[in-house]
Image (cartoon, rainbow, N blue to C red; front, side, top):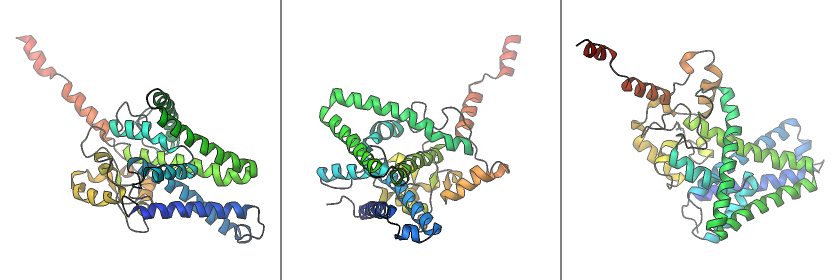
Amino acid sequence: MLKYKADLKTLLFMTITTCLFAFMWVSWNNADSILWTGGKLVFAGLYIWHLFMAVTVSVIAHNTMHVSIFKSEPLNRLMEYWITLFYGTPVFGWIPTHNRNHHKHNNKEPDYTKTYRFTERNELWVLLLYPFVSNYYQSLANKEFLQERYRKNRKEFWLFISQIVVLLAWVGTFLYLNWVAALFLVIIPHQASLYTVVVFNFVQHVHADEESEYNHSRNITASHIFSLNWFLFNNGYHTVHHMNANMHWSLAKEAHEKMEHKIDPVLNESYFWGYIIKAYFLAPFSKRFRTKSMRLERKQLEANQGKPNMGVKKAATAH
């Protein structure tokens, strides 16, 4: 049934996400539920867990649109609907913005998600604003993609429209039942999912060199069971993902280890949060924690190589 046994983990995470949502929704209007009787720490713990599971769904959406989970196409379509409900946007959106565009251009000028659209800086304010800018340009691409599918493949068009309809019905139903609960349990988790996955993209590409064969992406390499990489399905191994977009996520660690020596060490970070602390909270106070733009260094080198040797030119003129 499954193409890769490792996707039992994917199904487990989706099941946990669904069950946790169901529990919190039912508990919301039950004053005797542990959600309310357990105190603020219990509520905060369950809610943070709920938000985190929404983030894992964003990575599942990404993985699924690269390598589908099931051997059966009908099951894959159902899986896409299921993911859409908890991801917060139809999963077909990965096709025009990511599969077709980002993997083709990999942070170069035509990339909708390029990290340097308005600034070359790698600072906290840029990181926090980047998802809004990036998602705006991605939304334009999605609109064009639907128009194209309508012209070229009406069956696919209606499939993608059905994802939109299912999502709107899901959100609308819960807003009707209890708009406050829907805000906290449906809409905010959706936004957390959509926002965070774009933050990941920024971290993975900012100040790397989009023209380099091996230094075009930043990697997060720790993969033990307590690492973010483990919970996010090896999403940190980004260089190998760009080199082989159709490789299943479970194979990424081994592939990365085989070529890690070819990547500049500054692009191999052990932990995501370690990088965040260094690059965005310590860097303003210490230069040694600041990242250097490999992209700008390359462009400067290219500019220097393109300049004529003025001394030689003057000597030639004198003769």
